[in-house]
Image (cartoon, rainbow, N blue to C red; front, side, top):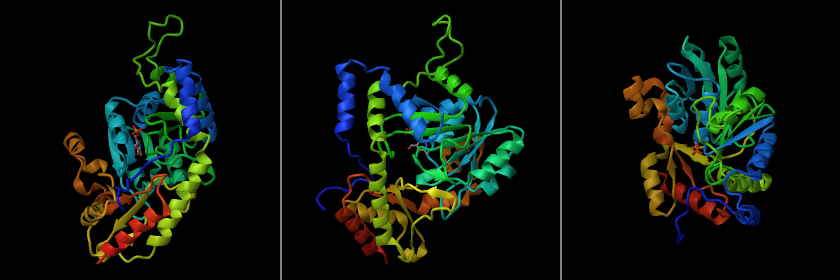
Length: 371
Ligand SMILES: Cc1ncc(COP(=O)(O)O)c(C=O)c1O
């Protein structure tokens, strides 16, 4: 291979260009009809009544927490193995992220561990539907009901994914999405919250737009944020959304080909999809090695780099982040499975433009490195 095979890339088609050109021609580059249409159509796609766009998945999480009144001294239970946007958004609300370990085989939050972490300060559970599968939501909803907790679903990595026939983002109080460039559909940068509550949607809309007063514009009703997604970005998102079925087809083919090539290799493991994810959509193609592979994860990724294959290591869990250990006193061994994934997990190139030859080349190189 002459060129590096990147971990992700995207296809930008004629529709994205047409919609963006339309914004430029109309000078509608701030707020405009693409924002409203994207909110309407995307929330509809995830079976929610309301969608409120934001500038990123991170600001969507922050907005969701603020909308649900998470604040000083509150505790929010969250998957330990996740993007730190989750923990940072909780921390920016002056609340404490309480890490919950994940299952070693599926990498999703282990809901059996939630109840013993609930105390008087606990206000919410933030589940993260990671890598295109789902957390088991029934026990989460039952605990939320029992202890009067709010449920936020972070669906940054699971657009269109279904739990027992329900689209993620429509199950808890609020769902959050990221449209960063490596996400299933993208705006470049962007996010959205989804909800079926008119009250929450109204509050989120106000909070994300500086809480301008309804009667007197510059007498603000609360301390707000400026999290507005520009019309140009929404135009891109809308164009992508209209092609989501073909994007999902591409992802399915990549997933199937890698699975065919890499299944059954001693020491090389593909995370399992759990039984309650009835619509799985591979977000990135993950692997983890164990001692039978004969080469550790870091060495494997170093050798792949020499072969011009990009890889990305698995998340460093919340309880292992230095800033949080200092602030909250987390222990290294709090979430052993999340730590195991941190040390052994990685993902391989799986962008929408990857060819079958590239998939086969990546697979062959991994197999060649095994001892
Ligand atoms: C699970 C998860 N949550 C939140 C985010 C944050 O999204 P953004 O990068 O759009 O702020 C990401 C980003 O990759 C993510 O993977």
